[in-house]
Length: 211
Image (tube, rainbow, N blue to C red; front, side):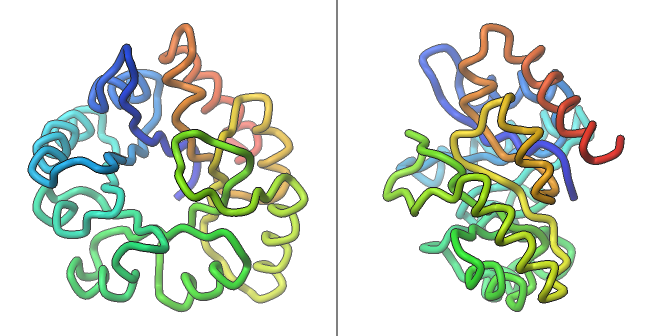
């Protein structure tokens, strides 16, 4: 698993589904539905619409936090944060066929998630982002380089995605640290042409992934 993960965002211009469709039209094939402080029924309804849309584009849909909704709509997987269901418990609910991702802020987090059997890690935050409350200490480039090197030394082979306030110009330096890809939202949703911006970001990531 590598490339661009688009995290849905509701804005004055776009709904969660509309923002995802723009990213899909731009070539993104990894979509995470992230709806905080929203009734479960509304999240599930949105997830079902988005699952159909992702199927149309042959894309993977991940549900943020909600393991049961992931299973109900048959999404590709779930992303669990530090305050959500532990990955091992999520695996018991979902079984082996679903993808489970986890959030890491420290190398200890990476180790714990690896041992818990996650399929990928979202490591951050890179810089300040308004979409995340109770932000952990910022990592910056040095933080990523150090944690990726530590992972290599400990033979932890797992896709690690950089996340947190990332813009297109950050991508070359971040990819050089060894991350598998980038997870972002605002850089696309706030762009003048979100579809074109998605294409540009994917091209930038693929340059470093050898594609």
